[in-house]
Length: 203
Image (cartoon, rainbow, N blue to C red; front, side, top):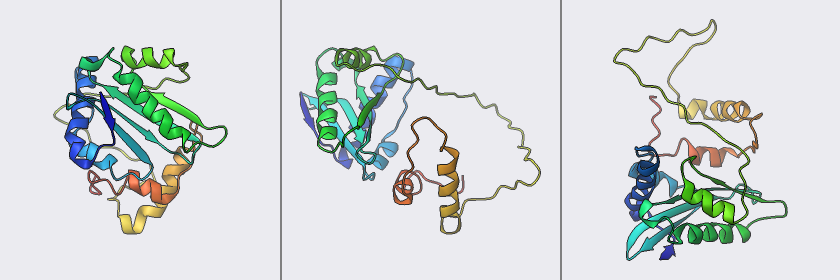
């Protein structure tokens, strides 16, 4: 198994790894190639791709949040479970974080509830669960009722040139009391939101 830094040309392979893992666990894809291409534009994100015999079998990314927090997303295709790929990718992320971390820094790995492979490796490496979150979804019917807005509230299309600063401040404030909140400068917020090729101000 070889671990290397991927390029945008590997977006389809990364999406394939993520999709294979998600389908095995939940029966559905959770990311597409277009979304993965956006990740390459994030200045605070490091990415590693694992290949076996030239085939992508694992992926991990890690974000540097002011050298204090290092969120990690680790995915391994089912064909590589139990082969050591998960361990190698985790080690790559940890080594990258160690080069940048300051005293008191924390590395946290996000993993799916059903992903026993990643959980096994994390437990064996001394990690412990500290928090759970949920993905909530609803099936939309053919007809959707029009929303009813409270008095004093109007809705209009977002205009980046006019609204960006206000929306940024509102977004930051809305998460201010969230667990582990750490504010981000507007430049980084823009990278993760407005600069995405999937961003559509009409929505």
